[in-house]
Image (tube, rainbow, N blue to C red):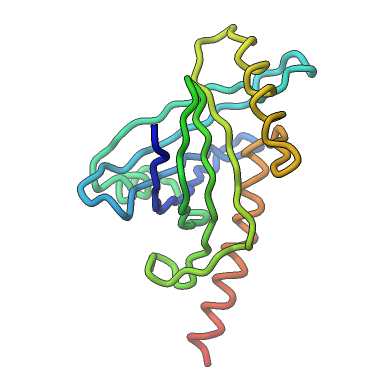
Length: 183
């Protein structure tokens, strides 16, 4: 099977409550395939389990939605934390999905035509959707990751760390954008 290319716009929404960490939802839509629905994703907390496990295990809910998703989230009390454009390729090997992509910062908030690469590097993600208790899948993921060395070093990365990186990116982009308007 040939790899698929994609060009997606992702917006990360937060709902701050009384918990220490906010509730995070990710809204994503295709920019290169018109008529495709928005996708809303919730990633649960990593399971506390075997520290020797080779992959993070978490609940994931991913649903297709209507075009007014972002308006709905704002009405529900969520606020957009940051947004970015992802451009890359999706490969499949059995039940594994390998995503290789670049992240682009949006220079003018809401304007996906005005973007620049966040870095020269590509991000490589390896995902598997499996029923609970399928720990053997993490061994398959580790074996696949070993085949990519020395070009790619796959590590367990908690996506909860990514929002901080993108939040700082969003703040810097906003400051740059605000500075351009004030000039």
